[in-house]
Image (cartoon, rainbow, N blue to C red; front, side, top):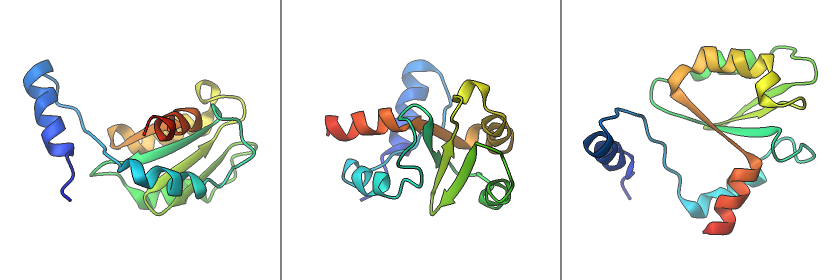
Length: 121
């Protein structure tokens, strides 16, 4: 099945005048994705899964993940970036560095949102 992302991007551009990247995931894949969560004890709002868009520099993210970040952690698995920020994303130095490297090529969702999406589907 072809990704609906290009069609969604086009509709957003036509209706809203915005050129924004779109990531799509099959609802049936979400439970398996959540099963790969490397931080099962983390609070739902302190763990984020990042989904890459074309242009994302995965090698730079892997290099960032290899560093020491104190209580914060970053794990890159397949096509997902897992960011654990015990003090919250808004206070996260690692989250800021991740945003600087990834720019508009990564979108993050916290575990609470992902669980809600699973529940909705």
